[in-house]
Every structure is written in C-alpha cells, then in structure tokens.
Image (cartoon, rainbow, N blue to C red; front, side, top):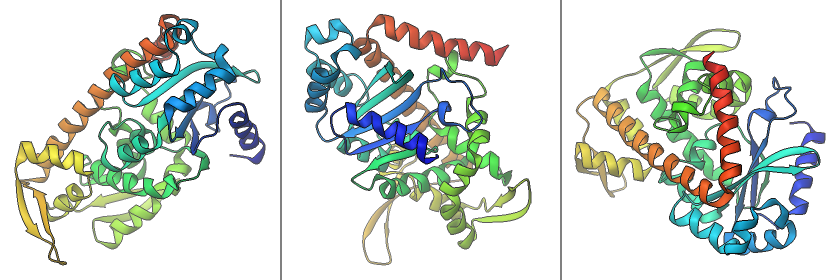
Amino acid sequence: MDDEKKAHLLSFLKVIPPVDFCCVYGSALHSTNHDKSTMVDFILGVSDPLQWHSENLKMNAEHYASWMVFLGGAKLITEVADDIGVGVHFNPFVTWKNKMLKYGVVRMHDLVQDILNWERFYLSGRLQKPVNMLMDNLDIENVNSVNLRAAVSAALLLLPPKFTEEDLYAKICSLSYMGDLRMLFAEDRNKVKKIVQGQFDLFQSMYKPFLEEYEGKGFLRFSSSENHHAHISQDCGLTVARSHVSSLPPTIRSQMWIKLGTKKVISESGQVLHEVVIGSREEAAKCMQKVLRRTVMVSSARQALSGLLTVGGIKAARYVTNKMEKAWRSWT
C-alpha cells in the first residue's frame, strides 16, 4: 500500500474512538481492482466494545440504525455480537470522504483467542489472507504467526502429493469458507481464485517463513517454477501428518480427539501431552475438514443473524443483495 492511500485510511481513525488494532482488507485494496464503488473493509480491535460503541454513538450516531439507538444502542450491539454473533459487530455502508466503508469491532481478547484457537474461525480466517495493518499496539502481527503456521499445516493435509504454490494459497484461502452459508448463494464462485491471483505476492511474503521451515524439516520439496509459481511435492507419510495435526489449534485438536481418540505422549522435556490418534493421513484430513466445516457453518449462521438484528433489515437486505449480484455475475 502506498503512503498516500495509507494516510487516507489512517485519517478515518481520527473520527472514531481510539482503537488498539486496525487492519483493512477487501477487493478495494487489490491492485487490479479499479471499481471506486467497492467498500473498504476495516477490522477494529478495542479493549471494551461497550465503551467504544457508546463513545462512537455520541460521535457518529448518524451512521447507526435509528431504531437501534432508540432501543439501547451500544449495549444492544455488544450483547447481540457476544451472545448471538461471533463477538464482532459489522457496520456496513458507512459513507466517509465520498468512500463506502464497512467496519467490524471486536474485543481484543476475543480476537487473540480466535487467532490462537480457531474457536469461531471467523477473524482468524480473515487474518490468514493478506491484510494491511494500520495500527497494532499489541503486536497482533506476531501473535498471528501461530495462525499462519496452522493454516499451512491444515492446507497441506488437504492437498495431494504434488501441487503448485498457487494451489497451496488457494487451499489456505478456502479453509475459512468451508461450510460458509454465504458461499451457497451470496458469494462470487471465483472468490478464492481472485483473492489469490490478485494478491499472490502478498501471500508469498506472508507464508515464505513457514514454507522454508517445512522445507528444512523435509516436509516439502520445491522444484522448477513458472512465473514465480513454484511446483511443490510433499511428504504424505503418517509421521508428517501427525506433525501437521499437532500444529493445529487446541480447539480443533480437541474436537478431533472426540472423533478419533487421544493418547498420552511424553515430550522431550518430560511433559505429558495429548495426541490425536491417527490411523492414516486421509483419516486425519477428513476429520479435520469436518470439524472446520461445522465451525465455519455455525459461525457464519450466527454472524448473519447478528448482522440482521444490529444493522437493521434495510441495510442487511442491501448488503446481501450486493453480494448476490456479485455471485450471480460469477455464475453467468
């Protein structure tokens, strides 16, 4: 992102209450996207969402649904996001400096937990794709390295013995869309392909350290590349599959324990660890996929309901209509 665009986006933070974390993402930031009407998407991390929304309502009440302000405002937003949704409140179609914005507000604790554990696999899935971090007071970029390594392991379990670098990034990108109800009717069928091809260099810079790490362990082998897209082969043995599963977040592994069983192992340091019982790589991949699909399906359904309740029927209908129009164009 060039300095001028970054400065423009940073100026948005001056008209809202202070935040601890801010990143922007979305097709509007793709170098190949020239559609000026496309929304720019923000994720805002705050320590206390209730306090933040209260202050924001005082500063920018015109950007909220009037019925919501009347019924309780900040408290309603926070309770719906926490109890019904997945802990993040999105406010779409905010007009600022002749630009359309959408911002999501999340408690910092919830953001960190989702990054480390994939409990909801919502914002953690977003952060597996390129984003531009504008503010990072708590070093979320470093915390997110755990998320990125887990994403590589999950993708490798689902990929065949030989694949391309683009295949790998596409598989990583698709993890958080498995089971997403929006993909059935309200998303571009070529969404993953467009994300990867439009930001290929960014995916490379994000995942290079982990691919080099796995190459050093003998998990991956790189061969000739075409247009800087490497051809990759991987070790599909059971030992490597177990290593990939051990890199998955605790929440995912615990659900795999229930389905496949668990055993105790002693680490080199003498610590007792629980390990998923894996009969074959295919069994582990299939089980993990089912766990991720269910997690994403539940989260997407809860977030959709939360959005309907907090942004109002008109905004929600407008948002879904826009999504469906894009989906329809991708199918025709």
